[in-house]
Image (tube, rainbow, N blue to C red; front, top):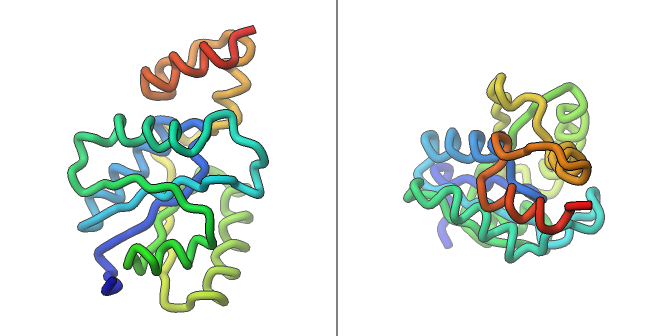
Length: 165
């Protein structure tokens, strides 16, 4: 596959996908010809996921079906290898807080060592989503909090089914 700087990967565990994730994906879709949302199959940093990769992909596919240049695919290898396999030369990630920056800075340096030809681009979180995290959403849902305005409706429903105490 020919590599293209007009094709981007938006990687993440998306467990579950939030409106903040979807905002970054939509903004990337405006900036790039093609966006591949890479769903990490078994994230090492986050440990076991609440939802399997297939279900997480389904949530994102449903929420991005209005974006014709967005594709969703799971991956289980190094991000830079996944990007190369898909012909992408750009990785797009969202940043919310300084803690995100510290982690992403480290990952960027490691990725640049492995693949100096693949560029990372960071989008600042939109103000209304700057506090959102998948772990926070799961915690709220576990204790019966209303997350319906923070995640797509299918995600809110599944969280209630899976986490209801």
